[in-house]
Image 1: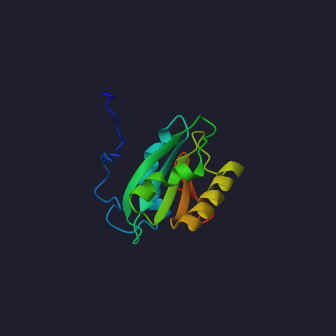
Image 2 (image 1 turned 90 degrees about the vertical axis):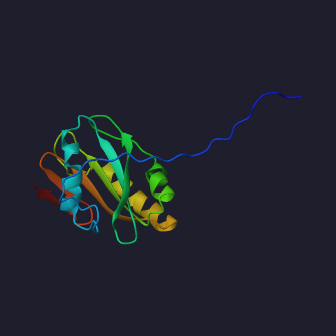
Image 3 (image 1 turned 45 degrees about the vertical axis):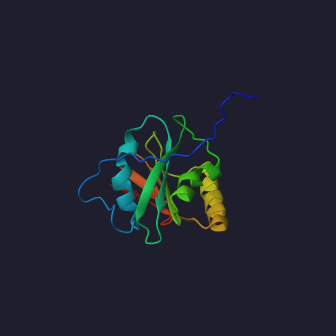
Length: 152
């Protein structure tokens, strides 16, 4: 007789609250890249690249966000499928990616463009649309959907 206890792993999801200003667009569609910057502008002070996936519902309202990866001062490496993990779990239909460039220049690199293309392709195939990819620099940001840089 085997007296060893066996276990199954159960997934347990918990949420932590991130304080935001009273004018934060948490209950309205997140369609303006400037509002995304306002919510995550603290990333411009990070010393390493950080990549965040924001999960959106059918009305483009925020369900949740997850810090998906933290890289080095110059680069971040992530498997595009990892970006969808929390979005799938919360039943999202849209996603916005946000990451920072610690050097301050939000201009997208070739690898930023490649990641954006891959995520858009995978999302289209999996039913989670990439709404935008915002790169945060020092007092400015770049929006892939708009295809331009903004000053703050």
